[in-house]
Image 1 (cartoon, rainbow, N blue to C red):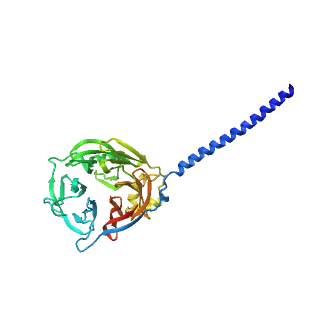
Image 2: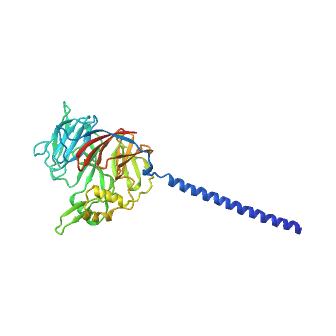
Image 3: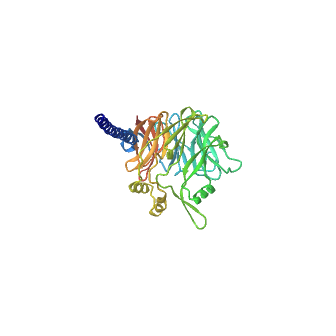
Length: 397
């Protein structure tokens, strides 16, 4: 009996020893498993610096010619037949170009008469390829230009509000024959208040308005947008110094079938809605964090011609990390995200509508994107030495 008991005890000791080894192995297995899971998750993040390069080529550049010498170019509208209308703030004109880049007409000039430009203005697309010219001064006038029997745009009607509206709406895109999506523009009083509060970002509502910017649906959504840095004089005068590098804005973009996307950089998400404002789906962008280096800010301040004095006031607002994207455009099948501007150029990352990444491309650092479709990017190229031109890039996706 004693022998059997000893053998039984030895057996139990052996089993316990084997169980300890087994538990250790199981523990090591799960440690490796979860460790690999974390590594896989990390390695699955998108590295903007390691993406496939998308081939692009300049297919058209509109600059100085015998018919037209560009001044200070602003908004560029590209219509369904690829006709182009551009604001020239340097000359206070609106110029029309054909799809091939030929100057067709100066459709509006500076002046005080019907269809003439009396103050600073912005351009917006209306329904059926019409042009809305929105004056940004006290008048709040809106002029409408359209084509008749010939291809040249001409003034079709003007509208001046009976009284100055307290809220100013800027058209984003048509929603129907009679409705537009718009976003509110802060008044001077609102801007002063926000700057005085010391906040870095504020919120502006997206609305639905009629042709004359009367609000039909208020505060459909709110978009986060940066508040500029300003200097206040002892007399109360406000001087806008600018926006620090790597600020961002939520963006509202209309898609096909009257759907739309709300792009929120601080949520790393693209939120897609139907025309009836029903949430359809979310595309999450899992991107590696990118630290803002001194070389980045040195380059951007130099590119913007920012003085050392102004730079010192802007630097306190520069974030530690770059936003997931700075701006976004939508074509039929792709999202185009502006993610950075460096010495290499303006970097754009392209995603499919399902969130699959296609690759990245680089435009000139002097390009300001105005319009995209699945095969082309149109920009205003603002070279400080050579002057302004309109560029069309062919994109090979």
